[in-house]
Image (cartoon, rainbow, N blue to C red; front, side):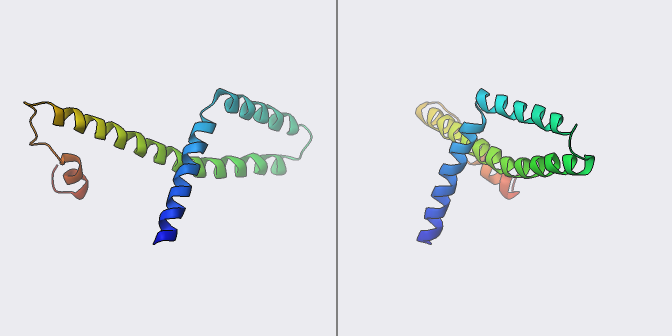
Length: 111
């Protein structure tokens, strides 16, 4: 169990750093230049090789970045929900009847 927690912490850290990295404008510029280079290479490579290179690259990067994006979105959503809960808890006249509503909906208890 301890090894799993350590691996989870390491992967979370890696995914957070990767999400921060790929969101930079410089990365967009580099990827754009790679795409221009790939397009130019199409003039010299046969079509099947040329197409397979970009097809494989897009497939792998999309597959991996999907998980990075979802992890980042989940962390942001949890942070926002925690802040909203703290604000509601600090209000003396707040209605707490909806507390835990999201968890009930996810368990399928409420619609």
